[in-house]
Image 1 (cartoon, rainbow, N blue to C red):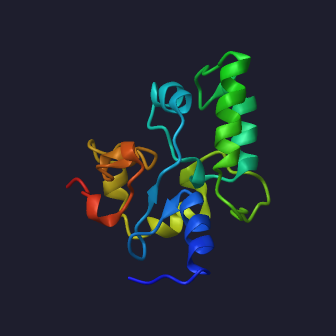
Image 2 (image 1 turned 90 degrees about the vertical axis):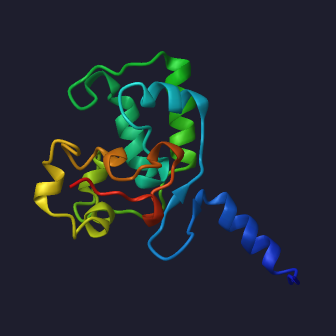
Length: 155
């Protein structure tokens, strides 16, 4: 197998982006941080930082005392480390129609477009409960794999 010298920089940029597209429409996120996984994953799935822009993560991390109805406050050092990780790995060019940073991944245009074929009955089923419960359908979500090959929609 031969590669041109131009292939190497492209491959490095692609791998550094944190998003590996296996096939069209398949998403695997690779960014990882132990404190993010522990702290955010203690209450819910540690959502991949690529799913929101940096501005959204910045706002969210400054309002942890009222994080979706819960107090998720962290000590300053931990909050700073997680904030830096989220912002460094955040999604790019994901502006919402309102121009305001979205706090809900499920409220983004991208999420709505990706899930536009999911019937309301699935979202409200006992196995799923709500759109933010990614792991209910994406069986490898804990590993950052949201690809279609690991998708199992509960009936």
